[in-house]
Length: 522
Image 1 (spheres, rainbow, N blue to C red):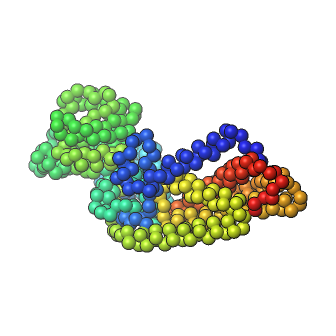
Image 2: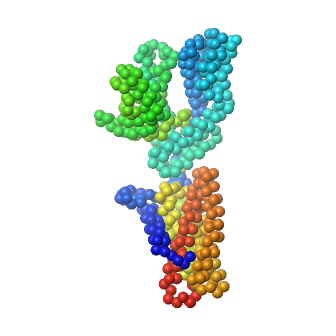
Image 3: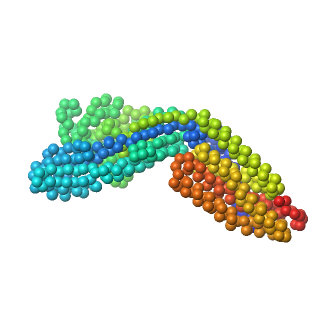
């Protein structure tokens, strides 16, 4: 263990240099780091909601809208499938948790059931051969499963939208069966955040029903009356067919750009969407189609020629900011249900400043006490351990900066705990060296034996703590994860500094000694 090759020395020095480079940006303001050349590290440790303030929103997912949409889709499915099978019906409607209809010929109950069975999923389907009555019911099990899926999907899309806004490590947690808690550090004005999260961003492409004059003729089954987005086509309403040509679910990318000096959004479909879009435009050349976002028509251009490339442009009366927000929403995906803001809070930085000062005081006091103890107990070797401890803190800061991790108050607690734990390995090694020296070994032999025999104990003790940190990260949430991250990083850096950095100092000192018989300074 007293042999230290040249490549090992270079690795240790390289890690320390990189640690200093990645930790250095935390000493400067963000404006200063943003002005640095792009090839220099500029990432800083992000402060959590409890340290720098931010916004906290409690959102409720409107599940009733989800179930109503599911029933409406079933109504459209029943209408189209029964017509395709030439099965007469009447009284088709959605009411409560049911879709009901009445067959004109009760003897067609079995063919109707067979035609609809593959489209109803887990919903309960029944047809009566005596009365001709048919029902599709959303059972409680179906609703519960749908509720869980919608909530999980909503959480994931909320996370994507917030990450796209450039924030770091938002805390997004499920509360109950229909609510989501969103905490975003650094966002003091939550209004734009609410605007971004409040839009469903459901994009569809639907054909315009040219046979119906809006506001004059009745809207026939299979069509719907939708308003134009404010400023689009001079306002007013338009009748579109309910059948969706292509859905926004098939979008792979959307970017804001300019066309003829006006902000627009370029979009691109995946292979399935491109095929559907190409086929739909090829079959409907010369007809207008509507681009619908959240049940409002953005524009209704005429299809001049087939669009076979899988990409297109959404134009409208957009401002630059609106085009950027629309592109962001389309990239993140549509929410499966509308979100309602139940509670909105802004957390000021006052508590965070107090917490930072308290954390800094605890860290500095802990560092000083540990260094005094090590110096008093182990002399020169204790000084080596103190220098390694300083490098340990640098490496922790560098790792948090490089990973883009968010530091919370529990995270500061993890760092303070790491300071005390960081010297454990050195204490084990130095005590073992003392014991070997008391048994009559020479300095070289005692140091070699001390490192070899203490290494197993060091690995075992740190590995068990690391496993606990990993479990906290896996099963914890919010601040618990922050504590686990800093603890795990601290364990890894403390093992590196104790086994590699302190040993480098000890071995260098040992090689430079002129008198091998001199007593160990420990």
